Length: 64
Figure 1 (spheres, helix red, strand yellow):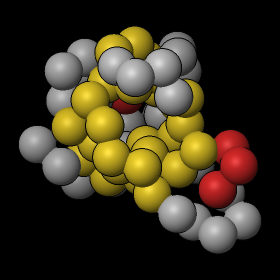
Figure 2: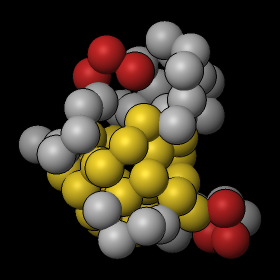
Figure 3: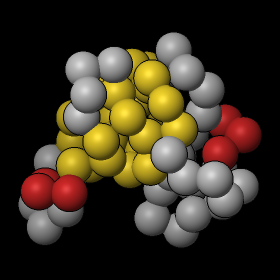
């Protein structure tokens, strides 16, 4: 599943995100969602989340 719809993403879900610094390369970072930072129900570039390790980025795919 892609990470563009907020309803698909909940705290505790394993996801791949793209960090701001990696947007040019598209390098993905895997982690577990701690907080959802985008309040809109849909975002065309991916819902912004904070991972449990504190990193922030946009969800590219949901792994769980």
